[in-house]
Image 1: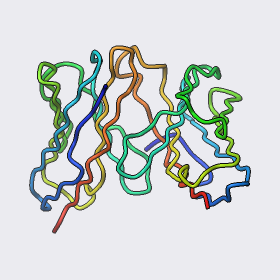
Image 2: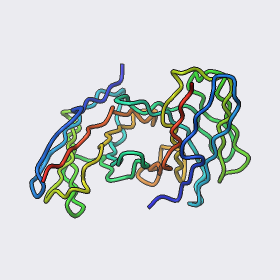
Image 3: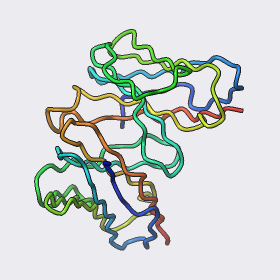
Length: 109
Length: 117
């Protein structure tokens, strides 16, 4: 079956760096998404990776290794507002979007 | 900032009630989606519409009935629901159906929190 694995919950300190990992097992692969979802709000698009490597967008970066079926989201200079759930999702060969259950990130002062 | 709105934001209904969820997108997109989000579970795709035509029904029970009168509006009609249907129902839209790359990114509305008593 197809599956996305990511940690259920992580805790980090304001101002620090945190890396949220995501591993995927899909039938084929056509790219991977990261979304941020604050409690009670819409998931918002953060990044899309289809080629290996690191893509940086301000404080957030996303990395992909297709050979390892692995991605991570790197958040730098953490702020309290970064407390949210982070969802990983991958397109399989048929462009079906396979979702992870999300990682709840808790930021402490 | 998302151009996808959903109403109502919260809904409590009994098992014998009939209600409807509404979604509207202001992004000029052609594809719209309904998802169910339960606590600590991955998003479950329910229905997909492309240019008003349903292209996917993920074995959703008939007590959920979608309607897409045009590319900007999507409804989910609910009747005789069960308590296990309580969840966050998310609507999303994308420029096109997946297959063309990053432009097919899905943009979500804030969801309707549904509680079935």
